[in-house]
Image 1 (spheres, helix red, strand yellow):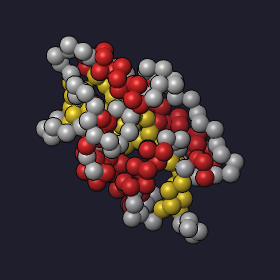
Image 2 (tube, rainbow, N blue to C red):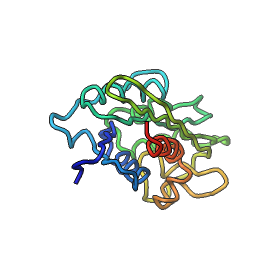
Image 3 (cartoon, one colour):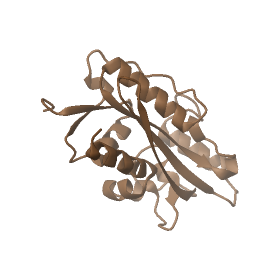
Image 4 (cartoon, helix red, strand yellow):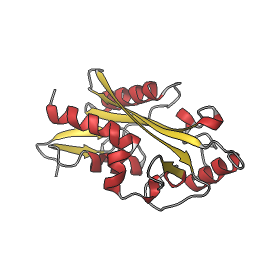
Length: 200
């Protein structure tokens, strides 16, 4: 139950992202809620800015204003150096609005067929917004390379094709706890967690 507890809205319709924030922030005296748990359900703001920070900030502010709740929203994505930083801020939409995660991964691997330098990084910027419009930013990144084929069945998105530098496994081959310690969202989330634990 959330009665009497500070409610924190995670401004995302992505169930994987909501699950990860619940895990990353577990143990804090906050009740994590998603947009679908509110009445009325706030509509998702557009993600059309040119940077992760701008997208995260606009989403967090819009959800906080609509809900009256302190809100965390992030923008995250995969940057592949051989593709000049693409898919980048358009990671989910780069291969089409309706492409499934499996289709996105397959098309990314096809683009990199025969490419020697498969260096990449995952980037996350999380924004914590108050209903009065105040925003704080927390960032994280992890470096690695794109695998030759998908591996693992954990995580979501591009996790099965991202091999972590110095580890050799893909993000999708990690346990949730392992992922939260080293992932881009885990690093940003740890900074956010410290801020929430410390209070205003």
